[in-house]
View 1 (cartoon, rainbow, N blue to C red):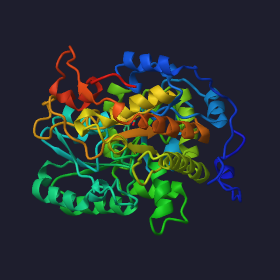
View 2: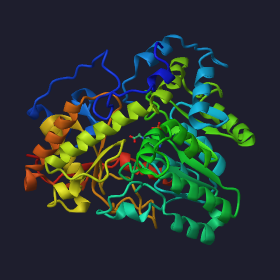
View 3: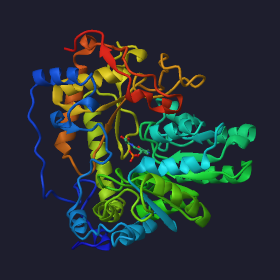
Length: 489
Ligand code: F0G
């Protein structure tokens, strides 16, 4: 590891808002395809790029999870890994890095985000509870149902306003949270804040909002309450705070991450995102008793407490990646790519959710294909057509695919709940693509849009499979299938 974390952040007059701070040493070839081929492939894959064999996706923006390019520093650290079961040599650098990153005392590795969540929700969420959040990610939502609790999304009002150009539209609605505590505080044992808010167009959360949640919990709680942060992409949220929240311009993103974590009781991370690794996660906290209570649960699910389902190699890669991923020069470049892509879309008339932030770009599919009613999947239709045009893999998060339940009857799978926006997520894998790739994705979307009313709406198919258990209902969207009402052009 020739260049240290400190050297990577040395003062520089090179404009990393214009050029990346890294260069390419290994390249990955892609499988050439033709339009006719892609039209057949997407049909065979039940009309979703997420079901395609990935070799047939040229630019894969289905997810930013586990899809980062690792650095030479990470690969070299992996050769030094120790695969001992107990107290592996590789555990110590990971523990150090996670403590530096979160500022917290105890760290618990987990094989990915959701296994860390599982032990937290098992410990803190009780049958009949309400679990408020700015918007649960699919897996914490699923853990709520699994433990007999109700996930309660109270996203701030700004998110629902199309014309609102402000940052931090991922915040929780603090007035609504206060009201919930006053009226039903006896049912609240955990509050979850997702930073940034993946399922709300990746919108960031402000430091002020995090601080306010802490204050509300302390003032209004009616029983012990855990303030939990879902920090899968916290470094990128920190960058937006640095740039756009007053008083943070002179702090490093790492200092900002530390401050964000300092308001929480516990943080859990899918390190597959901002951790710049292909696999890994962790939980971190300061309370020794809680740490001790979580230990046996981890051993049951993920293995001994010094590896949590990770090989020594994974731990070494994460120990390096987590700090590379919070480097200010790197984050500046990531935002640059995001802006390039958002502007490439806008200049071609493809509507995007504003503001685009560091996680990726969200397309407003109903604005691109206004002839398709919300309940007929404009996002699904546009994503399929964009794959046909350019081999690009995008994830539909429209009313058909957003995976929400009827609030009054979560098991009512027949009802299609309308989403506030008909979104397509174009998640940006880290360090993996060039600027030209983003121009290509924007071009593919524009070509798709140009077919206009020839693009079909979608309807749900009757699938022959056993009914999903009520406690797994949050995951229903993974098993629903849809078909176009007529052929795609
Ligand atoms: N929290 C957030 C905010 C996430 O986005 C994810 C995963 C998880 C938790 C769960 O982590 O996959 O490591 O178990 N998000 C991926 C995505 C799957 O595509 O957004 P995991």
